[in-house]
Image 1 (spheres, rainbow, N blue to C red):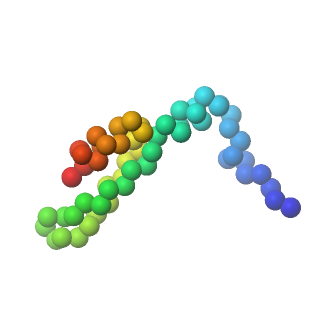
Image 2: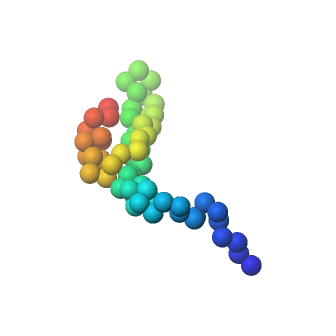
Length: 57
């Protein structure tokens, strides 16, 4: 029989609704020195994703 996860219980539905507006963005960036790829991560509001990707270099 399956058990319910305690983290699945939302105590504040307003905060849970606001959290859905954010997206984790990961961009691969090539290092000019070594040529290896590194990854830049960020939690960004879903309306600002394009601006974040243009900003990260």
